[in-house]
Image (tube, rainbow, N blue to C red):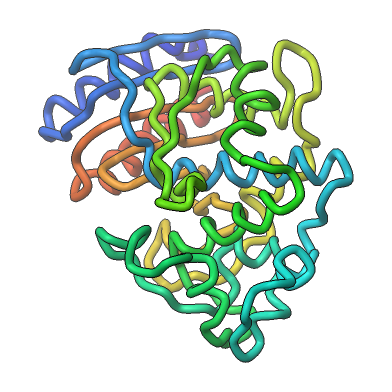
Length: 295
C-alpha cells in the first residue's frame, strides 16, 4: 500500500494545477488529518470571503439554537412580529432562510444593501412560492436580522462565541446602513483564518478537542439539502453547503473563495477568479479522491 499523501504533497499538486491553469489564486491552506501545509501567491491580507460567510451565519444560528435561544424551525414572523409579510412569507422559517428554500425571490444587485430602507422588510413583504430553492443574499441577511432580534448584534455575538475561541481577532464585517452585518457576504478573513472555520466544520463542531457547536448543525450544513437545479455541483444545497464536486461538499464564495471537505481533509482557497473557481474545485476534489483511492 502506498504511503498516505501528506498535506504538503497535496498542496504542491494544487499549486501546480493553479499555476498551470492560470487560476487567480491568492492563498491555499491544506489540512489532512493533523498535517498542515500552506502557500501564498499574493500578500497575506484579509479579503472578503463572500458566500463562505453564509456558512458562518449558519454557525451563528447553531450557537443560538444550542443555547435554546432560537429554533431553526421558528417561523420568522415569530421573531420579527412587527414586519409586513407577503403571501406565505409569514410561514417561512429560519431553516428555510438559511437553506435558500423560502421561495422568496429578491435578486442580487451591487446596491442590494441600499436599494430599500430595510432589506429584510422588503424581502419578507414579497410572496413565497413555498418550500423551494431560491438563492438570494437577502435570505441570509433576513435570517440574521431575525436572529439579532433574540441575540443582539450578530457580529458581536460571533466574535465572542466563534471567532475568539478560534483565535480570530476583530473579524470585520461590512454592514448595511442600519448597522447590521451584510451576512451573505462582507466578512473579511485571511486564508488561514477561513481555514480555521473549515477545521471546526471538518471536526464536526469541535475545537482543540472541546465541543463548540453541536455536530448535528455541522452535519446539516451538507446533508438533507434541497434540490437546487440540475448543474453538477449546484444541484443540492443544504445549510449553506453545496453538494459536490464528487463525494466532497463545499462552502463556495464568489471569485473563488472555497472551503472543500472530503473525509479527513479540508482545503481552503482564496482567489479572485470567478470563472475559474468551478474547475479549480473539481481539480481539487479529483486530487483528494485520488488520494483516498490510493490509501
